[in-house]
Amino acid sequence: MTLPTHPPTQPGRLFGVGLGPGDPELVTLKALRIIREAHVIAFPTAKHGRSIARSIVASELTHGQIELPMVYPLTTEAPSDPGGYDAAIEDFYDRTAEEISVHLQQGRDVAVLCEGDPFFYGSYMYLHDRLAHRFLTEVVPGISSVTAASSRLGIALVRRDSVMTVLPATLSEDQLEQKLRQPGAFVIIKIGRNFAKVKNALRRARIEDRAYYIERATMAAERVLRVQDVDPESVPYFSLIVIPNAVPNAISDPAANETAHTTNASNQPEIVVLGLGPGDPDWITPEVQQALHEATDLVGYQPYLDRVPHHPGQRHHGSDNKVEAERARDALALAASGRRVCVVSSGDPGIFAMATAVVQAIEEGPEAWRSIQLRVLPGVSAMQAAAARAGAPLGHDFCVLSLSNRLKPWEIITQRIRAAMSADLGLALYNPVSSERRWQLGEAREIMLQYRLPQTPVVLGYNLGKPNERVVITDLGSLDPATVDMQTILLIGSSTTKMFALADGRKLVYTPRTYGTADLKTDALTSAATKEGTKEIGMEIATGAATP
Image (cartoon, rainbow, N blue to C red):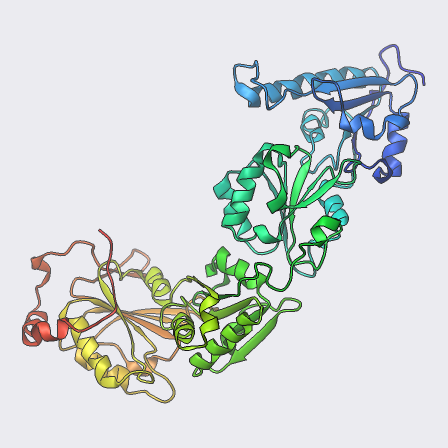
């Protein structure tokens, strides 16, 4: 090879060459051609002088090529730069870019070797940022460690419309846990001394049992283990953790095959009761999304199940809205058989929804059901959504009632309305009407008007979180029960609840956090409270108290 010895008429070309994960046979033909033809070969190395990148293609280097070791500052050493490691690494890239630019200016082609792919967490990209605007540059892609690990494990990371997320282990434990609670597959790279932190995050996200560890993928020293079996002191930087979207039947490592997953890998039957929120997919929590993706079976009222996309191999068991107890028993029987079961509710599962039915079924069912691990995952409730749309009508103490008399007598409902009104509580009303009962809301309104002034603010939330959502702010005197349906949530203000208009005409409703004797200012409220006395106030009501 003849090297330029005087300033050329045209500068050399810069190549960022991806070498793949380590196996020399996985280097592309284009990468080999460029390496053989380049005048200068630059490669990363530690201070001890050994370079993994160079070793991958050592047999391809030709006589007369200039070798340019790029000696990195080590993260395990105290950097001499007063600005710390970040300043030291920036200085390193600046100096290395200048060394490379000298060769390029003299007409020499420079190939920068990079393990994996140059633009996938590769070190080359920082040199590219400094040089690409000055010299003709080409990047040669390489097989990444992520796809190599997937192939070596024999695991398909994603299928159809599922999502894969790549996370650097350098994130904080809390950040990792938050990301890992999202649905989909994950690959965590840059493990090294971060292993203990990553393992804790996996455990907290409840996915440690489907995580696989692989180090030096495709190299001679490759090692594959279950995460639980890894010694934290033996983890090199060139290692990663793979969490597939679905539980695989087996992986390529023989030792791992002995502990391959079954339908429920923990051998502990589990049932998850969860809430989807009122309707907007953005209101579904990451914790709930993760549970939905892991489930083999979803059980619930059919319209709620229709809101959850089907996943391959997942069964949906839909039923009518009047068979809560039967639905709970069916779900527990599935869980007891080893299935991963989610019982799906709208809103929050603990508010007039399936959590109660499942817990009661466990108590009243076979003794074996008491060994089933129960998780209840909260969701955004309809009353929270309506309150958020209107401002802050539930800013002080409030009561939550269902007007449905299907499961309790109407007399109990009216007693509780009077008790809530006597105590001057705000009121959230669920199930206000149905096709079979249209009169209850009108009677409830008449009772409330015995305790509240007609101008008491009322919020009506229709189909919250859905395309046809509508929020109406009115008052108790103007409330027309004929405009309300089963998909409506009502919020009735207390004596202190206020309503006002913004500059654009939009109304806001709020209940102040402060409360004094001066707020008990209406004759209607005072006379009603005196007349009812403590008999009604002492009745059992569901309240939500604002924390001071």
